[in-house]
Amino acid sequence: MNEWDLIIIGGGPAGLTAALYGSRSGLTTLLLEGKTVGGLLSEVPFVENYPGFPEGISGLELATKMAEQTRNAGAIIREIETAETIERKSGMISIKTDRASYSSNALILATGASHKPLGVKGEEQLKGRGVSYCALCDGPFFKEKSVAVVGGGNSAASSALYLAGLARQVYLIHRRDEPRAEDAMIRTIKDRGVHILMNREVLEIKGEGKVQSIVILDKNTNTCSEMEMDGVFVEVGELPNSRLARNLGIKLDKEEFIIVDDHQATSVSGVFAAGDVTYFSVKQISTAVGQGAVAATEAFLYVRKPYYRRQ
Image (cartoon, rainbow, N blue to C red; front, side, top):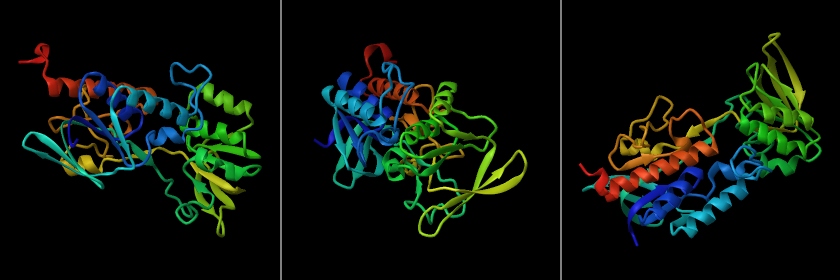
């Protein structure tokens, strides 16, 4: 089946929610994911602020539950299938992947974001040799070692919490004078022995073949120092995966996040967007889920044009 009412590109929380709502509304719904479902959520060691899980849940487990519920609703999920091009032809949206070609009446882009690099000397050369962007993936390699998590948001705090159960010493380094993470998360990581260094900036990652130290600037005193370190986990934000949107002519903001209205509609008719690829200021699982639900509902109204929405 290559013709669908609704196609969603991206299998993170926004995409999975959109597929769930789309299928439940009666639309034939296909979700395409270039890797495996979950997106960056699968890399989050522990989620404490998602409603319904008072004891918390791992990102991977939450993503697995979302995917199971979406499949049970009737949506088709095709993993390891990468969307390569999108075109709008004769009122339909044509999508070509590395495996097949599809067409749909409506499209939701939930392509998410990628880890933003620090952009400092030594980072690229030591990537995979002590520099990591996924604590859950690489944390076990640093048992009884010293590691630094660079960043000040909830993702950084969550990674620091996970690493505190593995590493000998964990430092959370943030370039501002106060963290962006929730107070509850900060209290928790402090209780677990994480050293929080505020108003510090990593200038360089050093090592011969592997990470051995970092150079940091103390912005309080304007002095530099070098700290011995076995690993550096970078959690400083995300870069939107908006190439497909840009190629389709969808309007993006100056940082290349997709611009959407209150209905998650993009500048191209029949194309909606949700989740971290949009310019929405709050990047949380719960907001991605909410955007996915809105996008799918609006896609249903666009495709079916029920009597109460007809002009």
